Length: 535
Image 1 (cartoon, helix red, strand yellow):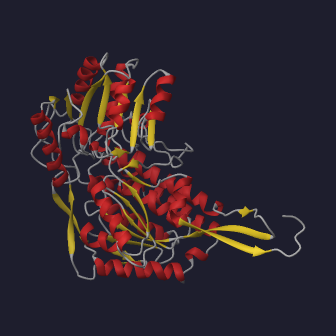
Image 2 (image 1 turned 90 degrees about the horizontal axis):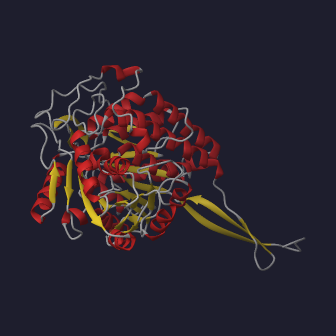
Image 3 (image 1 turned 90 degrees about the vertical axis):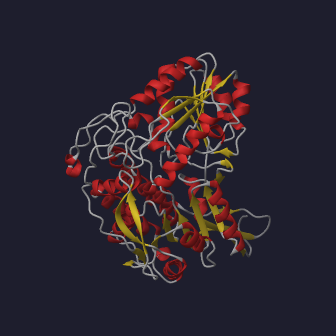
């Protein structure tokens, strides 16, 4: 890829109506698109141009059935029909995976390879990912429902970029020489932490895989990864490629299964040294409790959010509407950092609401394998019903439903892009994480008002600020209690930019140099010096 850095930003998505790249398997795409207000039903779904070849657990370098023999269905969110039956791992399988990871760490070559050799394997893996870009993207879209353009042109390339980023770090991890008050030589060693248990969500299966597996392996650890039961397919495919790149057996193990069984077993396992989790705040609390009650393993958490997107009174309203629309509706609204509380200054509020409504009506919804689609289906029936429940709560609370608010079509998990105005801070739709295509627009008076209200949330993951005034931007970026503030942009995710939250949005940071600390122990080594020439 020509660009040194891939940004998952508004500018990189503005070509959603442009034809897909014309290489390889992209040529199968149809051209029919429709806006949600003009069609009552989805056309017959396109057959994805990929086969499902890997549905077993990956343990100690081999694909194996679950010890129980059980499987579970993974569904096509466009139709609710079964794509494949996947091995259902539970505590017994987690034990086997952890044993393989432990042996690979204690006895195997991975932490004993030179850092350069580890980086070479990771670079080869990134090359293989690029070679199989279209197949990986098709699996991701088929299993998750996100637009193929997004998977193929943004997420798979970003996945490869992240692994190249961490491959570059592998041979640059080192300790320090520390001066002491006396005749001693003091050094610190940065050592791999051991076996890392990692639990990833369904909204960005590939990117969350990279955020966790990348730094863990670069630091010399071994991994047991539990995938989300809704979206297990892409992780199994790319993990096979990783072994083709030369990854030793047992270094990366993948267990598909459910949270209360496989996830719980991993978080509470006595031979796991560290656990990383991305998902809901409620589940994050359970993971933290299980880790504490077992062996007090180190935990990093990337959890929920209710991020404010603040449109200031000096804003170019047309540009603000477009960016706020992207901040909320991207990925079907299934983003932990979605700009789900749109605060608009009272001077421009009415104009903003009318234009936000018009933009939502124009949003192109349909089969995610078609050209130009902006929004596919929600991931599954549970998420679909949850979103509709919140929409009903918004209406019942007295918010104004400007557009949308109901199912689209009769098949699959499509929801009309929805906009609420006249939203109050105490309404459920303004307080709780909806995780869907529902924009809530609130009115504010001045900076003090919006700072107080934006911070009055249990979450603190991210925020957006749209202004032409640098003083206003500086005031807000320092006042908002969140882990990321995007100024006049949103969802800009570079491999080097750290990501994580304040308050109940989690603990620790992922991506960038900060993520390496999650997978390293610091050891101090002190040696006496005899007649040193200098101290």
